[in-house]
Length: 289
Image (tube, rainbow, N blue to C red; front, side, top):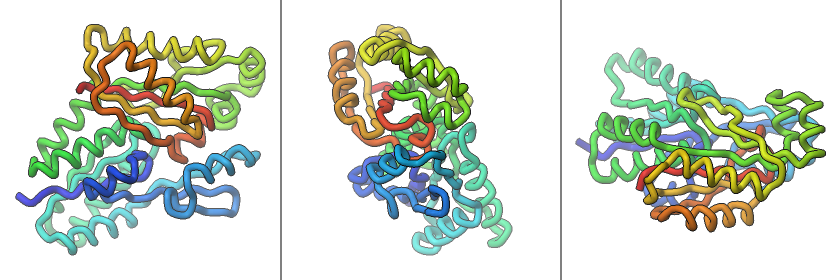
């Protein structure tokens, strides 16, 4: 069997060096600030996005990749690499319709071509590098010549063992996105409240706790991981930030005091998740070493 080609949408936030190392095909999402439209990672950098976000009165809108766009991606890959399987991973179906677009694209291709398309579509049930870690795992397995079925099973297994928390710095974007009331955001900001979010087994973001003050919030995240992981001390970790590298590095340092860190990945929270959690957020993803 030929080595599987790995496809993922840009919300995986996989560092560019890893994308290039493993030959991952990234399908960018689109976002708009009013009349201005951008292709994520191509027309607008992470830094430019957060700069625009802080200056905009309204949240930008994001557009999921359409089935026809995925048909084009898959068809081009199939023409360039005949007989090569494709493994396509996507942001949680609980946050976006992109996974459904990819499934529909596969069906459309099969109808057009009259044959079964060798495309395995996977719902990551997560976002940013919680999803990206599965993309990289799939790419590493593909490089070893492992079959799409085995890749899917392992990616889903690791997804169930993944643990993650988002430490949100400001409440404004949760309020703009309708996740909390404006009055709660104002009071919370005055009291220096820091929400802690996670993603459930259905791939939906939910509030875990809220703590007063940054230091207490960071300590709470460490405590949550200690409770989640029990006796397991050997872990891989990814820390993603929304223009808050100092907070990310501090989180890595504190995690290293409690766990033996094997792989350590640093990356940025992209536009889709960043729209709702805002600048200053730090997200921590942990999975078995």
